[in-house]
Image (cartoon, rainbow over all chains, first blue to last red; front, side, top):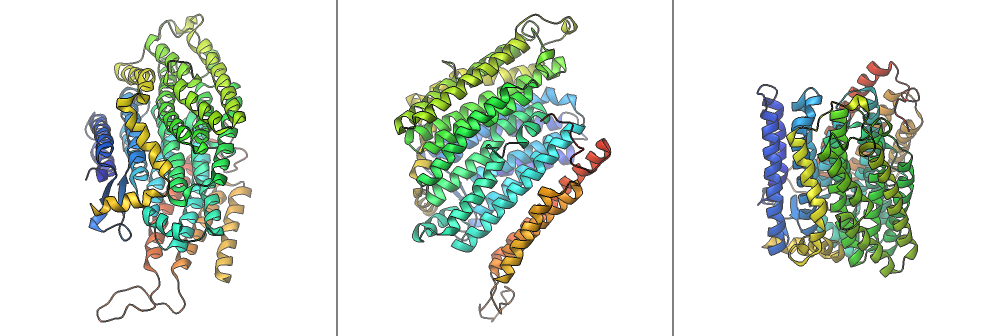
Length: 496
Length: 112
């Protein structure tokens, strides 16, 4: 019974922090960091447990699945849980120092933990309506966190994001309602069984379109991407890292592929839609990123582009493609969080995000410059960093399936990414130090620690493809490839 | 059937309001209208002609009740809608403090 803890622990922490943390100094920092560390340990334990025993199911209130709500932990869920909690822990540790730039730190902690609750809930939920509820918890916390600085730009970005997010949620809710009327059940496993017995009607097609629009907006796939560069560049750096690193993947990509692959059963039509969306996002966003001079805005455009790679990989639908897509999901969350934390570190020490104003920061900020170099090389797909392996797998999978043009587009996207990050390195960290920055200092200990850990993961993540760790990725990919067998896997696990 | 159609019309009115209006308060009202339309739709799903309230009393047969689950769902979505509206309205207030206007075309400090 470890699955409910992923929701209970952050939720309880959020309320404890909200009640007591403004009265006792440092309580918020200590409590949230401990909770995040505990959750990271727990998710690693869950990953190993699922690797050994198969699917975990927790029935809420003891009611068996079609009646009650159940929480499901299978290979894909624990894969996502590990990513989310890893990034959350490091972002939390980073914010111990970084959030001193802002006032009312305890509100930040409470909202952060609520966002974590929502994301963990989306991942472990086995009930469609429950998934929607958690999605909204995460989204509302996200809107507030984007506006956290309460400057004019931040408020504007948060308002746009909130409007887009609310519309997307309502599309999803309409889809949920239609599915309930069609299948008379909300349990995901039961719904898959019911849908398997019915003939494919127009309802499913309509619901698919609603979900594609809703989750596509949440995941910022082109052409629904306009809110992301504003929102992700306006938030505080640890939140940008969370939003770009795991948030759009959890409530956008994960929820979408879970429903399409495991509930509706994937068909070639869906797959080609996903592939086209992926390739378009990949190319359009990277071209838009080339012209950016605001460091965080540039990174935000790259998030859209890298989401394109993930969707392309998963959209291929072949074992190799899905594996590559999920591996890139893991890698992207690591290096993109690291890049956002780097931009936060530059902002913390130098006080600017404009690339034209920085120069030669390598001399004064060696740790930030070094980790940022690792992350830039990872995102551009230079061996031996992790981004190279996942992009290679995706490109090979494209060729294996005979989609030569998609493979070509992926290579072009990768080259443009490299161009863009060469620019970042050249303007921000190399070159001559400006005189007015003669007395800047490297960032404090906790911020350095988070960045170094993420950089080490960037270097070592290629090892996940080797046999002792391979089960972690393989189990996740197998869940998607098994498609509708999800239903029987969950229902047999319930009987145990 | 006409009920579903009217519900759809309400949905479209709300979407029109979100897309076309320039005043951010009206946009928020648009969100609220779409949400009501979806809530109404969910309640309609559980409705059956001549149905009675789904209350289980002693020695009453379970006959001809409306579906209680959509009602529970609607309660939850109303609460969520409240939270979203509060966030949006408080953002709108802060935006008015900073920009001095509710006109979305004049709220443009972000590049892009």
